Image (cartoon, rainbow, N blue to C red; front, side, top):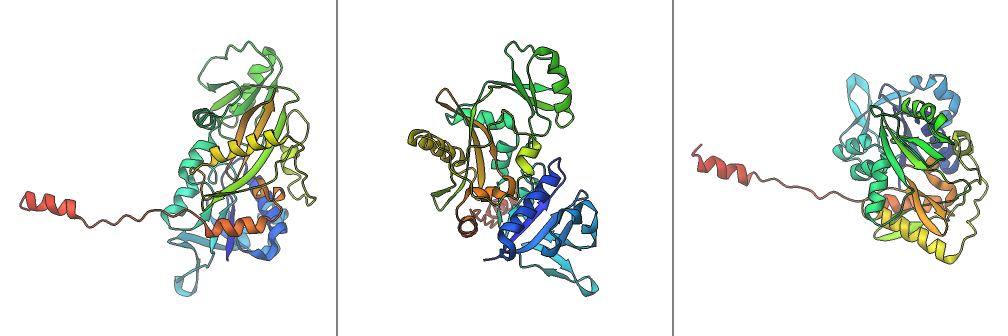
Length: 347
């Protein structure tokens, strides 16, 4: 089985995607056939595995790599006299966080060009990329979320009575632009910070000391493969460094010490969220637990380093996912309808 990885993209999370790709390289080594980097100009580059180092990208040296083009069934190199050669990429793993990778842009492109890929499809991207739509989706399928309001840049300062709250850009992850607000005096500043990244914000109830649990997985041939359940750091708010400077960790993650009933509730909620909507993707769901009630925090359709550290045998999960990707129903058009119109009009 051949697996290739695409990473980068035009996003505030561009560098995080590079860190993820390097972490996956360190985990899987020769199991990955090609590394395909998408830069800020939307150019694709073929990166040698020996160059999967942060400095290679931050220095701009990646532009010395071979530039490739996307097309029918995959990616192409340019040969002698401009003749194109199709790379045997196998299945493409979408490892682009944020815009391009999680908002459905590349999902549409991959489907258009019939490129088999691991990652959220367009519908799943729509639901999970926008925190407002995520909450509406969760509530619709019977999964609770913390109380929140949606605020847009053109609106007046919201009249919030109960503090603290947490202010988040609606379409951004990785703890970027997020502020915990203790009182009304600091609310306007928090909004200004978040509006640097998005024109829609989520203002959500903040509960200090709340329990957080993460679980990753996928549904393959109608059966779920789930990771262990992780209980992250006890800090009230995980910042950028907490989340992403530890991507290369190699120590084994220990399962959260929770009761069988809580474990059952978390796994059941994950399966309900994943449903048929996220088929073809390996996702991570982050939950809160407060006063014995479970709340969805967010859906990560392209989790950092693919949450490989949560699985005992990550490669076997990827292998199974590659072999169980959803297929689109082929539409055959024989033009009978237009022919009937032609004959009816005598033309």
